[in-house]
Image (cartoon, rainbow, N blue to C red; front, side, top):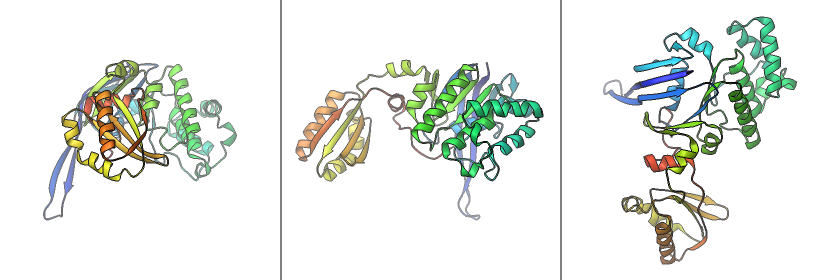
Length: 337
């Protein structure tokens, strides 16, 4: 087992108010959270912002100390920082983990030296990785001149320099264009084929569905559900989601729906809803316990408000649907913790 974490808890202490009227607030980022990652396995850690994902990644990276629980990384106790850090490669989102004024090659030489890699091995490793990541032709380019996609490949290259058995990927494709994101996912699959254990956090549910052997839902620091993506999706009915597309002035109608949000939840017609303005009209995305009942209700209500329904779509169940059913929350809520 490459990662074995049991009953991990972490609490933050936040001070609020003026110096003369200061209040202390305790925030539980993780609460008895457990997780395992094996060789050649990709685990998707999914949940809204504030759920505790980044806190857990930082604990595994030895950047934070847990309050309680036990963690073993590649056979080393989490307190053995030296050997734990040698065992992991980390990719964080939107952070300057490379020196922007240096070239890719200069960055790799610098970080390889920090890893105390043999000079001959390091140069061979740079050549191998740059070829695999398709950035061999731009090794002499300064990082600041790279596109987001190429820069993220360089960040992954840095994480792989010491050939660690474990990769921690925290939102690795955040901000990438679709082509770059697809290329990055291909690289992740290759690393899995090499036997590396990968812990992946992402807000892109299709990405987790596509890559993960198992997914773990985390909410408010606690594990909600765990399993293979297909099995998790099969635990909820495929007709849980309905999308309505409206034409015309729907302001009064949508304001009414918003005002009825809690009542609709109480009578199980709508578990959650999201209103999106599109160029072709307004899109109302609903999660429900009964698609037929909800569809009839929206049709009657739209007639009452004299609103035309252009289209009704019943999409396939996604991992986000499963999360909403299990927790009543959407994935993109709250602040990072």
